[in-house]
Length: 262
Image (cartoon, rainbow, N blue to C red; front, side):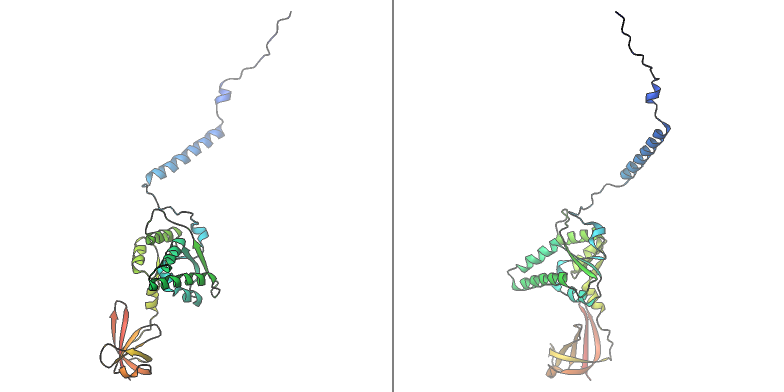
Protein backbone atom coordinates (compact mmCIF):
# COMPACT_ATOMS: atom_id res chain seq x y z
CA UNK A 1 0.00 0.00 0.00
CA UNK A 2 1.45 3.28 -1.13
CA UNK A 3 2.09 5.89 1.48
CA UNK A 4 -0.17 8.94 1.08
CA UNK A 5 1.73 12.13 0.45
CA UNK A 6 0.54 15.48 1.78
CA UNK A 7 0.16 18.24 -0.80
CA UNK A 8 3.07 20.58 -0.88
CA UNK A 9 2.28 24.04 0.50
CA UNK A 10 4.57 26.88 -0.31
CA UNK A 11 4.99 29.01 2.78
CA UNK A 12 5.16 32.76 2.21
CA UNK A 13 7.29 34.91 4.42
CA UNK A 14 5.35 36.24 7.46
CA UNK A 15 6.14 39.81 6.46
CA UNK A 16 4.09 39.37 3.25
CA UNK A 17 0.87 39.15 5.31
CA UNK A 18 1.64 41.72 8.02
CA UNK A 19 3.47 44.53 6.29
CA UNK A 20 0.94 47.30 5.27
CA UNK A 21 1.14 49.02 1.95
CA UNK A 22 2.49 52.55 1.63
CA UNK A 23 -0.94 53.92 0.64
CA UNK A 24 -2.61 52.33 3.68
CA UNK A 25 0.04 53.78 6.00
CA UNK A 26 -0.45 57.30 4.62
CA UNK A 27 -4.25 57.08 4.89
CA UNK A 28 -4.01 55.84 8.47
CA UNK A 29 -1.64 58.66 9.38
CA UNK A 30 -3.98 61.29 7.93
CA UNK A 31 -6.95 59.88 9.89
CA UNK A 32 -4.98 59.87 13.15
CA UNK A 33 -3.90 63.51 12.65
CA UNK A 34 -7.49 64.52 11.82
CA UNK A 35 -8.88 62.86 14.96
CA UNK A 36 -6.18 64.33 17.17
CA UNK A 37 -6.95 67.83 15.80
CA UNK A 38 -10.68 67.41 16.50
CA UNK A 39 -10.04 66.20 20.05
CA UNK A 40 -7.67 69.10 20.64
CA UNK A 41 -10.27 71.66 19.55
CA UNK A 42 -12.92 70.06 21.74
CA UNK A 43 -10.77 69.96 24.87
CA UNK A 44 -9.45 73.50 24.36
CA UNK A 45 -12.95 75.02 24.59
CA UNK A 46 -14.61 75.63 27.96
CA UNK A 47 -17.37 73.10 28.45
CA UNK A 48 -20.76 74.72 28.70
CA UNK A 49 -24.24 73.47 28.16
CA UNK A 50 -26.23 75.52 25.70
CA UNK A 51 -30.03 75.62 25.93
CA UNK A 52 -31.47 72.94 23.68
CA UNK A 53 -34.42 73.78 21.46
CA UNK A 54 -37.03 71.04 21.67
CA UNK A 55 -38.18 70.07 18.16
CA UNK A 56 -36.09 72.93 16.78
CA UNK A 57 -36.65 73.81 13.15
CA UNK A 58 -33.26 75.49 12.85
CA UNK A 59 -32.27 78.75 11.20
CA UNK A 60 -32.54 77.36 7.70
CA UNK A 61 -36.23 76.39 7.88
CA UNK A 62 -37.71 78.95 10.27
CA UNK A 63 -38.18 81.47 7.46
CA UNK A 64 -36.64 84.60 6.01
CA UNK A 65 -36.17 87.66 8.23
CA UNK A 66 -37.71 85.91 11.27
CA UNK A 67 -39.39 87.96 14.00
CA UNK A 68 -40.71 86.42 17.21
CA UNK A 69 -43.95 87.95 18.55
CA UNK A 70 -44.54 87.99 22.29
CA UNK A 71 -47.81 88.04 24.23
CA UNK A 72 -47.84 91.83 24.71
CA UNK A 73 -47.66 92.47 20.95
CA UNK A 74 -50.64 90.25 20.20
CA UNK A 75 -52.73 91.85 22.95
CA UNK A 76 -51.62 95.34 21.87
CA UNK A 77 -52.90 94.68 18.35
CA UNK A 78 -50.93 97.34 16.45
CA UNK A 79 -48.87 94.66 14.72
CA UNK A 80 -51.88 93.89 12.47
CA UNK A 81 -52.21 97.32 10.79
CA UNK A 82 -48.40 97.46 10.58
CA UNK A 83 -48.41 94.22 8.58
CA UNK A 84 -51.33 95.35 6.42
CA UNK A 85 -49.54 98.62 5.65
CA UNK A 86 -46.77 96.74 3.83
CA UNK A 87 -43.93 98.16 5.92
CA UNK A 88 -43.09 94.74 7.44
CA UNK A 89 -41.42 91.98 5.44
CA UNK A 90 -40.44 88.56 6.77
CA UNK A 91 -41.68 85.65 8.86
CA UNK A 92 -43.68 86.33 12.01
CA UNK A 93 -43.19 83.50 14.50
CA UNK A 94 -45.72 82.86 17.27
CA UNK A 95 -44.40 80.25 19.73
CA UNK A 96 -47.02 77.89 21.15
CA UNK A 97 -46.07 79.04 24.66
CA UNK A 98 -47.17 82.58 23.71
CA UNK A 99 -50.43 81.32 22.24
CA UNK A 100 -51.07 79.38 25.44
CA UNK A 101 -50.47 82.49 27.54
CA UNK A 102 -52.90 84.52 25.41
CA UNK A 103 -55.49 81.75 25.75
CA UNK A 104 -55.01 81.77 29.52
CA UNK A 105 -55.64 85.53 29.61
CA UNK A 106 -58.73 85.08 27.43
CA UNK A 107 -60.11 82.64 30.03
CA UNK A 108 -59.52 85.06 32.92
CA UNK A 109 -62.46 85.80 35.22
CA UNK A 110 -61.50 89.49 35.07
CA UNK A 111 -63.47 91.13 32.25
CA UNK A 112 -60.68 93.52 31.22
CA UNK A 113 -58.04 90.79 31.01
CA UNK A 114 -60.50 88.51 29.25
CA UNK A 115 -61.17 91.17 26.61
CA UNK A 116 -57.44 91.68 26.06
CA UNK A 117 -56.86 87.95 25.66
CA UNK A 118 -59.68 87.60 23.16
CA UNK A 119 -58.31 90.52 21.19
CA UNK A 120 -54.93 88.78 21.12
CA UNK A 121 -56.47 85.56 19.76
CA UNK A 122 -58.37 87.60 17.18
CA UNK A 123 -55.13 89.27 16.08
CA UNK A 124 -53.48 85.86 15.64
CA UNK A 125 -56.35 84.69 13.45
CA UNK A 126 -56.25 87.82 11.30
CA UNK A 127 -52.46 87.66 10.95
CA UNK A 128 -52.62 84.05 9.75
CA UNK A 129 -55.38 84.88 7.29
CA UNK A 130 -54.12 88.22 6.04
CA UNK A 131 -53.58 88.59 2.29
CA UNK A 132 -52.88 92.33 2.13
CA UNK A 133 -49.12 91.79 2.53
CA UNK A 134 -47.86 88.67 0.71
CA UNK A 135 -44.32 89.44 1.88
CA UNK A 136 -45.26 88.40 5.42
CA UNK A 137 -45.63 84.77 6.47
CA UNK A 138 -46.98 83.70 9.87
CA UNK A 139 -45.90 80.51 11.65
CA UNK A 140 -47.13 79.04 14.93
CA UNK A 141 -44.35 76.77 16.22
CA UNK A 142 -44.15 74.32 19.10
CA UNK A 143 -40.42 74.79 19.78
CA UNK A 144 -39.52 75.13 23.44
CA UNK A 145 -36.54 75.62 25.74
CA UNK A 146 -37.08 73.16 28.61
CA UNK A 147 -34.24 74.67 30.68
CA UNK A 148 -36.04 78.05 30.87
CA UNK A 149 -39.04 78.34 33.18
CA UNK A 150 -40.16 81.93 32.54
CA UNK A 151 -41.91 82.68 29.23
CA UNK A 152 -39.73 85.76 28.72
CA UNK A 153 -36.59 83.66 29.10
CA UNK A 154 -37.94 81.09 26.64
CA UNK A 155 -38.68 83.78 24.05
CA UNK A 156 -35.23 85.33 24.36
CA UNK A 157 -33.57 81.91 24.01
CA UNK A 158 -35.70 80.96 21.02
CA UNK A 159 -35.06 84.25 19.23
CA UNK A 160 -31.33 83.97 19.88
CA UNK A 161 -31.24 80.36 18.69
CA UNK A 162 -32.99 81.26 15.44
CA UNK A 163 -31.08 84.49 14.92
CA UNK A 164 -34.47 86.24 14.96
CA UNK A 165 -35.58 89.64 16.20
CA UNK A 166 -37.99 89.89 19.13
CA UNK A 167 -41.04 92.12 18.66
CA UNK A 168 -42.59 93.41 21.88
CA UNK A 169 -44.12 96.35 23.73
CA UNK A 170 -42.91 95.00 27.08
CA UNK A 171 -40.12 97.26 28.37
CA UNK A 172 -38.71 94.72 30.83
CA UNK A 173 -38.65 91.91 28.26
CA UNK A 174 -36.97 94.23 25.78
CA UNK A 175 -34.24 95.07 28.28
CA UNK A 176 -33.67 91.42 29.21
CA UNK A 177 -33.52 90.30 25.58
CA UNK A 178 -31.00 93.00 24.68
CA UNK A 179 -28.77 91.87 27.55
CA UNK A 180 -28.93 88.35 26.07
CA UNK A 181 -27.74 89.68 22.73
CA UNK A 182 -31.13 89.55 20.99
CA UNK A 183 -32.16 92.33 18.61
CA UNK A 184 -35.42 93.90 19.81
CA UNK A 185 -38.12 95.78 17.91
CA UNK A 186 -40.21 97.70 20.44
CA UNK A 187 -43.39 99.00 18.82
CA UNK A 188 -43.58 101.78 21.42
CA UNK A 189 -40.20 103.06 20.22
CA UNK A 190 -41.55 103.08 16.67
CA UNK A 191 -44.65 104.98 17.78
CA UNK A 192 -42.50 107.64 19.44
CA UNK A 193 -40.35 107.96 16.33
CA UNK A 194 -43.46 108.52 14.17
CA UNK A 195 -44.92 111.31 16.30
CA UNK A 196 -45.27 114.66 14.59
CA UNK A 197 -42.43 117.11 15.03
CA UNK A 198 -43.91 120.34 16.39
CA UNK A 199 -42.18 123.50 17.59
CA UNK A 200 -43.49 126.43 19.67
CA UNK A 201 -45.24 128.99 17.49
CA UNK A 202 -46.63 126.40 15.07
CA UNK A 203 -50.33 126.65 14.23
CA UNK A 204 -52.63 123.60 14.20
CA UNK A 205 -56.31 122.79 13.96
CA UNK A 206 -57.54 120.27 16.51
CA UNK A 207 -60.82 119.12 18.02
CA UNK A 208 -61.36 119.82 21.71
CA UNK A 209 -62.59 116.50 23.09
CA UNK A 210 -62.96 117.22 26.80
CA UNK A 211 -62.26 119.68 29.60
CA UNK A 212 -58.82 120.01 31.16
CA UNK A 213 -57.84 119.73 34.81
CA UNK A 214 -57.18 123.42 35.26
CA UNK A 215 -59.72 126.20 34.96
CA UNK A 216 -60.69 127.17 31.41
CA UNK A 217 -58.53 124.47 29.80
CA UNK A 218 -59.67 122.22 26.98
CA UNK A 219 -57.90 119.09 25.73
CA UNK A 220 -57.46 117.82 22.18
CA UNK A 221 -55.30 115.20 20.47
CA UNK A 222 -53.18 114.92 17.37
CA UNK A 223 -53.80 111.98 14.97
CA UNK A 224 -50.91 110.08 16.61
CA UNK A 225 -52.49 110.42 20.06
CA UNK A 226 -50.32 113.27 21.35
CA UNK A 227 -52.20 115.40 23.91
CA UNK A 228 -52.56 119.18 23.49
CA UNK A 229 -53.81 121.26 26.41
CA UNK A 230 -55.41 124.49 25.17
CA UNK A 231 -55.88 127.50 27.43
CA UNK A 232 -59.35 129.13 27.50
CA UNK A 233 -60.92 126.29 25.46
CA UNK A 234 -63.11 124.78 28.16
CA UNK A 235 -66.30 126.06 26.54
CA UNK A 236 -65.28 124.80 23.08
CA UNK A 237 -65.58 121.03 23.72
CA UNK A 238 -66.68 119.24 20.55
CA UNK A 239 -65.45 121.99 18.20
CA UNK A 240 -62.54 122.13 15.77
CA UNK A 241 -60.43 125.17 16.56
CA UNK A 242 -57.16 126.75 15.43
CA UNK A 243 -54.47 126.89 18.12
CA UNK A 244 -50.88 128.06 18.47
CA UNK A 245 -48.36 125.88 20.30
CA UNK A 246 -46.83 127.78 23.23
CA UNK A 247 -44.84 125.16 25.17
CA UNK A 248 -43.60 121.57 24.92
CA UNK A 249 -43.26 119.42 28.04
CA UNK A 250 -41.31 116.15 27.92
CA UNK A 251 -42.70 113.32 30.06
CA UNK A 252 -41.62 109.67 30.48
CA UNK A 253 -44.55 108.70 28.25
CA UNK A 254 -43.68 111.21 25.53
CA UNK A 255 -44.33 114.86 24.75
CA UNK A 256 -47.17 117.00 26.07
CA UNK A 257 -48.07 120.22 24.22
CA UNK A 258 -49.63 123.41 25.56
CA UNK A 259 -51.38 125.86 23.28
CA UNK A 260 -53.55 128.97 23.14
CA UNK A 261 -56.37 129.99 20.86
CA UNK A 262 -55.22 131.66 17.69
